[in-house]
Amino acid sequence: MFGLNVCGSALGQQVTVIAGNTMPAVKLQELNPEQVAESQERADLARQSLYYMALMREVEERIERRLYRQGKVLGGVYVGRGQEAIPVGSGLAARPSDVLFPSHRDLALYFIRGVAPRQVFAQYMGRTGGLTRGRDGNMHMGDLDRKLVAIISAMAASIPVAAGAAMAIKYQGKDDVAWVWFGDGATSRGDWHEGINLATVQKAPLVLICNNNQYAYSTPLSKQMACRNVADRAPGYGMPSVIVDGNDVLAVHDAAVKAAAHARAGLGPYLIECKTFRMTGHSAHDPADYVPKHLFEEWGELCPIRRIEKRILDQGWGTRAEIEEIHARIRRETDEAIEWAENSPYPDASELLDGVYES
Ligand SMILES: Cc1ncc(C[n+]2csc(CCOP(=O)(O)OP(=O)(O)O)c2C)c(N)n1
Ligand SMILES: [Mg+2]
Image (cartoon, rainbow, N blue to C red):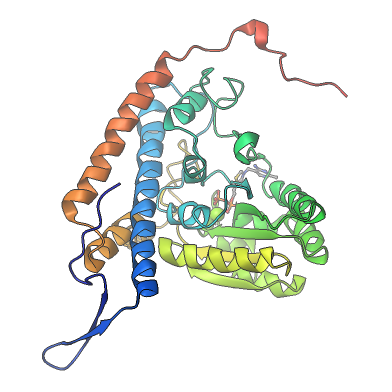
């Protein structure tokens, strides 16, 4: 992506700035090779996170603000603008052999698993180049070869299925994990509770990631659940949970690493509640007039992409020019991907019944 540029914290030395009344005192401490490797790993993670978050933002902007408005998208558009740290931080903590159940605001999981942006554009435009080969005009896409299970439209319906996948992993004696993402509203559905009850009783290796963006369509959190946090639901199932800043990609990543280790160790499910905010309407056709404007302004200040950029610069993990090059590269790749997708044909009507089964 871009080379390691060390300034503030030279590799091999930890620079600790101790705030004083007048001048900060700087303490230099030698790092051992393990710590150097760790800080290099952190720098790589930060840069990779920036790439995937910026790619998700760009692809979704093109879909929601251009292709949809040009009438080229078939079906609805639901984006995760402002929530990119959640799929990216957690997705980068998953192993390739883990099975993933994304929600409708987790596009980055597809990219992390190797799906190309052009396939996503083709998917939204109903072209044969999409993951469902033009059978579905929006985001109900998956790729089982990549262990990405397609989004199930009904809210929380993926929880019992993910619980089943986690049980299968356990029966096969593997130490993989099933990961499932969902919103705050999904946690008020019956299937969420039933699926979690089953998974916890079975000690199935399941990591549950809630994007608490404070709205379920037009319903604010206070009108859809009486407890303060989604995490408060966990003790009722004998399951550990943690609340993290969902706009801090490294915090999400660290929580996800811990949750996955718990599940892999045979200790059962783990719930992560990521506090965030939905920076759009529910979908592209929803202007979100019911959301107080000041909330968009306040949460806009906490943009996860701007925050990781600042972290990269502050830590000396990269320069402004390198960050700009990442964005420029993504814009170029996105332009090419859209062109490719627009040239991908619609499916032929003769294929309509392919893959449709009768029991
Ligand atoms: C059973 C069911 N009821 C209603 C819907 C329509 N619907 C889709 S997403 C959604 C809101 C989901 O809210 P939340 O779980 O908080 O996720 P978010 O969209 O905020 O990420 C609704 C009402 C649905 N898909 N399934
Ligand atoms: Mg929500």
